[in-house]
Length: 410
Image (cartoon, rainbow, N blue to C red; front, side):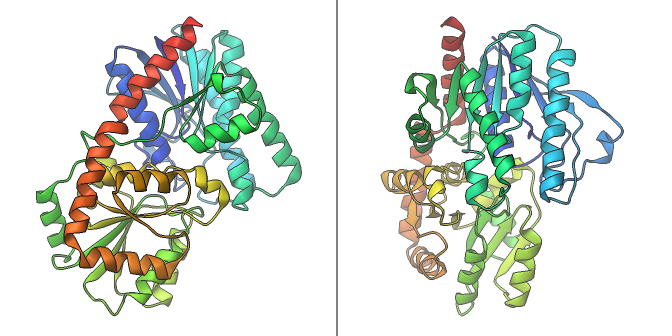
């Protein structure tokens, strides 16, 4: 197959969206398919395009057998509503042009991953101009999630976004979803289950493995040799509610052997650092975003991985990929996500559930795991085995290839 893959975010950017798109694309290429990805110039989440890309409109690249066409976007470090819309719409415009003028070879289909929902505009345009089928991937129910988080309040814009959302659903030949909850929600909203396919998030089990030598080295570098380390590695955004982790850290300052690591960037990071300073926390360290190949080292150096989301009903259908990255590295998790993620945690027995935005219960969960190293080890092994059997990226890409081939044969 010849696949035109639209993902606004893509490596070298770091994040769940980038990782899923990269892993799917490279594994499809490994299977012998021709894949072209159209992505933005790297800038997320800082909003700053590196000097190497400035003054350009597009650039061709190659990454592990995948052709990458990077396009200009109106990026900005200021994340207000107007600038966000310019950011999203600029990609929709330049990706549409790239998909019709720069990606010259014939393609069998266009694969569109959302959010950002406006990637769907490009997909619809390319589908129409090139007369090829579109497969639409839904990783988050947008604009519904943005409304729930208070990020989107303008009634007119919400209505426009909902129209675009439904246009993508109607015109897509298949809709790929990442959780059972999203599947059920779309069926509830009137989409035929015959058009829906579940391909969940997972982990690159070849890259993400427990590394004892990296653990020893990194803990020595960070002066954490005798510490029990709880790590959060990911975007520092609105959805995660990381203030709860800082409140738990404040309560645990009387336990000097417990330390918290925050690894990553995001729109709330400056506020979190400020809050940690106000509370005079000595048991918290913030690190900048790390290249993805280094994340397994940080996870290996920790004793438990924290997977939090805010207490919002919509997150009951969420299944963060950080769960499987941690499990692939044999780390137990403290999960603060209700619904589907909790069900998988309990089926795996790979960690403890803590109610979302409950600092007191998070504190108790950390103490329980600190005091029971044999429990941590057993949960970590459970997580690794469970991920290998059910959520390896290689296996999920094989399923996607089968779905796409079936789509073309219908």
